[in-house]
Length: 79
Image (cartoon, rainbow, N blue to C red; front, side, top):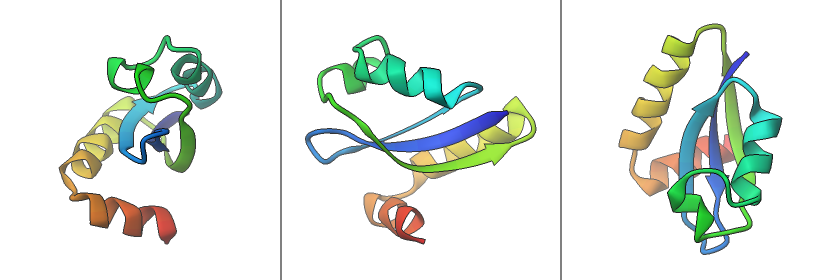
């Protein structure tokens, strides 16, 4: 299982990433072992995720989401 996810950080910013183990990755983020960006903005909350069959599909989608403006990411979350 390959997952693209969007987290909301404690300062209200959004972080997008991908993983093959969402539960562990969320634990990593919230314990300060995740991305450098999220370490300074704990705690983080999962707001959105999509599941893909391959790593390549997930990475392409992650890149596409990262190119979106904040407003579009919020629309995606609220769909």
